[in-house]
Each structure stands twice: as C-alpha cells, then as structure tokens.
Amino acid sequence: MKVISLNTPSTASTIYIGKDATKSRLPALTNGVKCFVVTDSNVHALYGDFFTEYFKDAEIFVLPAGEEYKNFASLQAILEKMSAAGLHRTSRVFAVGGGVIGDIGGLAAALYMRGISCVQIPTTLLAQVDSSVGGKTAIDLDGVKNVVGAFYQPQEVLVNPTFLSTLPPREIKCGLGEIVKYAALNGEIFDCLERGFEDLEKLIAVCIEHKARVVERDEKEAGERKSLNVGHTTGHAIELTSGLSHGECVLYGMWLETDMAIKAGVCEKEYGARLKAIVKRALKNEPVSKLDLSNVKAFAGKAKSDKKNADDNKIVMSVAKAKNEWTVWALSFEEYVSALEKAVLDWKREELVCEQ
Ligand code: ADP
Ligand code: ZN
Image (cartoon, rainbow, N blue to C red; front, side):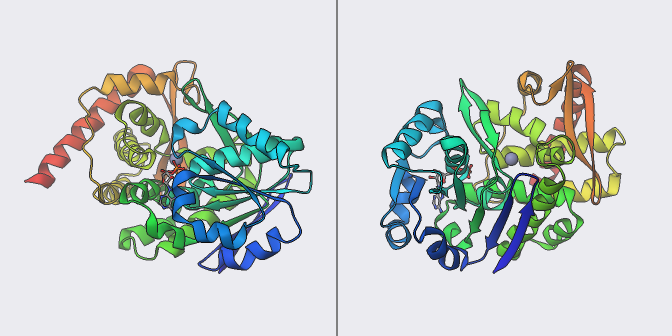
C-alpha cells in the first residue's frame, strides 16, 4: 500500500492507495466515532457487503445517482439528516462514491458545525486519480457547475482500486482524461503513457503524488494549481455542448489546445506531437464517440461565458509547453476562435488519414 501525505497550512491529509486501503484504515476510523456515510444509489446497490461490514452502526444517506442531484436540495437534505442523527464535532463523514458524492459529501462535512472530519473513499477512476484529493468540494447552482463550494481537506483519502472492477467503460475512459492531463504536466507519467497504459494502480499513485505536491504549494489555486486545468478550457466548453463525459471532453480539449499551442510556438513542436499522440490513443478507448466539431463558434462561445476562463474578454488556458513545463496562455476571443478553427481542421485531417 502506498501512503502519501498532503500538508497544507490548514490541515494534514493522508492518502492510502492499494487494495488494502479500506480494510486497513476503516476499523480505526470508525471505532468509537459516530459515523455518517454519503453515497449514491449505484454504489450502494453494488457494494452492500462493504457497507454492512464497515458501516453497520452508521447513518447512511443514499443520493440518487447523477450530477443533477449535486444541488442545494440534496445538500440541505444531507445536512438535515446529519443533524437528526445527532452528529457532533467529533463525528466523521465518509463520502463513498464518484466525483459527485465526493463533492457534495465533502461540502456537507465542511459546513456542518463549521467543519467536521471527512474521509473520502473514491470509487470511480476520475475520483481516485483526481477529484478526491486536494480538498475541492462543491455543488452546482442554476446550471453552473461547482459554483457553491469550499476548500476543505479530507482527513484521509482511501483509494482502493478494487472498486474499479464494476465501473462501466465510459467511466474508465472518463478517468483516463484526467490521467492524460497529468501526463501533460509530469514527465514520468508522460513516459509511462507513451509506453502504454500498463499498471493502473501505479499510475493512480503517481498522479496523486503529483497533485499532492501541487496542492501543497498552492492550495487555493492562486497560481500553480491552475496547471491542473490543462485541456479544461476547451474541454468544458465541449462538455457543455456535446453531452460527452467530462474526461472525454478534456481529452478533446487537450488535443485541440496542444495543436493550437504548437502552431503559436507556445508548445514545443516535437513534444506537442508526442502529447497529441498520447491523447489520441486515450480517445480510441471504448466507447468511442464521435464529437461533432462542425460548430466551432458554438462551443467557443461557451468558453467565453465561462467566468473561470474569461478575463477582460480573454480566453485563458493552461497549456503544456515542454516536458515538465506548462504555462498560462491568454488569447482574445477572436484569436481563440480562429486558432480553434485551424486546430479542428487539423483534427479532421488526421482523422481522415487514420481512417484510410
Ligand atoms: P465522476 O467520478 O465521473 O465525477 P459520478 O459521481 O457522477 O462521477 O459517477 C459516475 C457514475 O458511476 C455514477 O452513475 C455512479 O453511480 C457510478 N459509479 C460510481 N462508482 C462506481 C463503481 N465503483 N462501479 C460502478 N459504478 C460506479
Ligand atoms: Zn477535470
């Protein structure tokens, strides 16, 4: 089992990665403590034995599965149930599920009595490799993703790759999007992926290690943590117009932004080509979905309306520059649309070549 510490000015958080992570930590974490579990209907149905074994005395809140439930009404219902269960300052919340559960469970823990202990038990690849680590918690509001939230570090994160055995291929591919994002930032992960996606457990550990060090240096995303948004500016915009999974959109976003950055001389040509090849290989994983790239203006418009990316009418991207190097790249909206249109043409040209 691999153990990684993440120390910020506010908290010390420990991440355990391996098949024994839950078995070895849960008895101590639940012993003599009032426990409250937040999970979703799919995970609850699939892992009944797990809940019976470790949480037989705990209150279990089962949210219907789906991002649409990551809202205020659910948060209120969770907090009310925590209060009705008599949770106090020394009680502990366990968020067992994918990114949705980690986000809303973490936020409930952050708010209840101004913050009680929280343990994240991520069960999707995306949550294991990325969202359960680093303390971002949130709900959506009026269709805007993650707009109400808090930075709140979990006391522990228990990453057990056994949970991934029941994950549908679409969700595995979604997590690959974030793994490839780490490859764009970290030479060791880049080399691993260039050789092929071999040892998933090891990859999860190196991605978490990378994220932990970044979050320690910049917990509140004032600078370096922005690097973790590579591919996300264009990726989010595609997500809002396509209905594809988050990770898959990040992959498309990363390919297009890297292509744009190479042309502008922002990203090293040879390195950028290798990165694009890694991204493309990840996109070929099942299920392969076709993205309609005919309306570039439509999704470019979404990037503009995204407050996180837009600053004085500029579109701001975090892009890979060279191995182990990244940079913030800002373009006017017009420059962005024009560069994106050229990148889309490149994508279509490459796809045609591949299909021949
Ligand atoms: P993400 O981690 O991708 O942000 P979600 O919390 O939305 O995602 O989870 C994605 C889907 O996968 C949800 O339908 C959730 O119920 C389901 N899910 C979570 N963990 C597992 C698992 N271990 N096996 C099967 N399905 C799972
Ligand atoms: Zn992401």
